[in-house]
Length: 100
Image 1 (cartoon, rainbow, N blue to C red):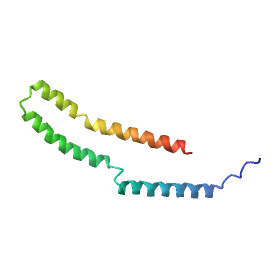
Image 2: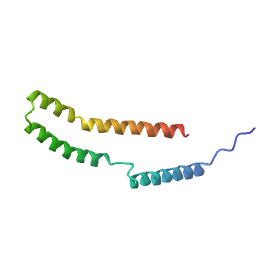
Image 3: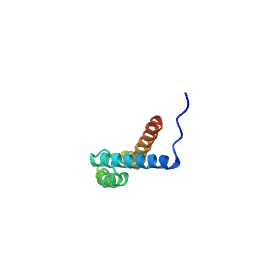
Image 4: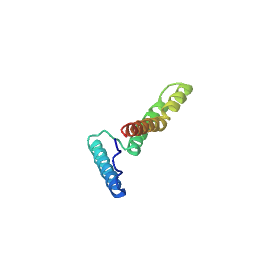
């Protein structure tokens, strides 16, 4: 069976543009449904929460070592958020590659 004719460069570019537009609409819809969170805004909100928690811990009667351990653990929240973002990026890339 003969192979189908190759698409012209113009047709390929139109297809790429349509795909990008569809992806853009899908992303906007996810944002509107609250399925996507702005990482910078999330980190800013968490920073405020952890600042308050830090003050509570520092004012507590806990031993200094316990305070230090707790504060060290909660100080890793930006790394935890970045790890989640990295995993999601890999999942999206894997899904896109598997759909090709």
